[in-house]
Length: 262
Image 1: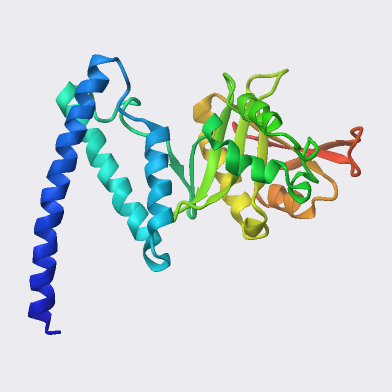
Image 2: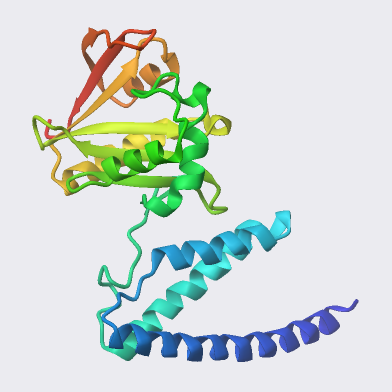
């Protein structure tokens, strides 16, 4: 096919896409009216994640990351349009998703709706081996964990790869029960992402973002047998504090700490 013919077909598709886009935005305007009338926030994370999951399931493998990026942009424009119609600051928390990015990962707030993927990890004995809980045998146990990681004062995140948005694991900064300025780190990843440097990216994220959350230091508990975890902490600048044993754990436990104010 000649270049001119290819471009002609692209122009036709552009026209069709523009009509569909404007129709979609018109419907989003109706959604905005409903939200405004019922006191609802513009940003609906569960709905957006539902859309993205459907996009991923429909996409052909070579196009998945581009399909996801396209729909993320669509939803961003939708939120801005809804904000304009309702006279809301487009940069307010009610409009923008609270998402963070590292070089290869995206983090967004952990929710109870994330139970299925999180349970797939917490119920895996190999994943839970070095964690402070035994492998979960019932989803209710994982819901309790999600609630604990997202309780007031804590910051729990679902970790996904970017740009494809593949579920990678869970990361959380929890306020220490004895000192609210200390953030206890919780981190567990899907086995396919082990030993690939992702823990280091998340620790660097914590070092940068934790002070904004009111924390002055980071603290991590890791089993002595978890050599990759210990190496990642040491590489990130954490220093060994103490070692002790916990009932039910086959390995000793070491505590590492990183001062953020130094």
